[in-house]
Amino acid sequence: MARIFIFCEGQTEETFVREILTDHFARLQIWVYPILLRTGPGGKGGVVSYQSVRKQLVRKCRQDPSAWVTTFIDFYGLPSDFPFSDVTGDPLARVLAAEENLQLDVSEPNFIANFTAHEFEGLLFSKPAAFGLYFSGSEAVKKLQNIRDTFPSPEHINDGKTTAPSKRIQQILRKYDKVLYGSLIALEIGLDAIRKECRRFDSWINKLENLKPF
Image (cartoon, rainbow, N blue to C red; front, top):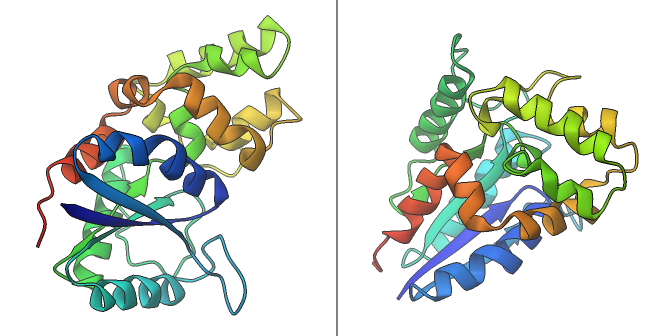
């Protein structure tokens, strides 16, 4: 049975792995374990520097070489010291370049680099109607759907300081809180719907589904 440790940027990603991915992979006889990234002694959650993240990844890869290690980190907001190429053009090309450079730099045989394009909230645009269960008012859902319809996919919603997925949601729903609502809305949308809408995310899940034990 394959085992996978998933380093999560924050509590929302950790809950998503625990509440959604764990059961999915268990049916495939694959055991996944979320690990919250540490920001410092006693601190948890968030990405403050590349070297801090790299140390945690390399340490885990070497501590348990019979298990796989991967990441569930937002591409949006990465510190400037992360090793990724300044690729222009299609926004997903930049995410791919970042993954490739992270993979090369960590360079452990049991490591699989992954970035969410462009952040966790992008996945929630797979089904904007799901917001209606937690926030009243059809107008807000309509605005979220209009944003989704503007882009080829939820993963194309860009990573500007005011136009990243979370920023767009907060502009419409002032009370939106990622930790409180993010995983709840994702649960309502369902893994299958997210995979159908978000092809990069689906590719990551598919890769993990096909991992074999060492």
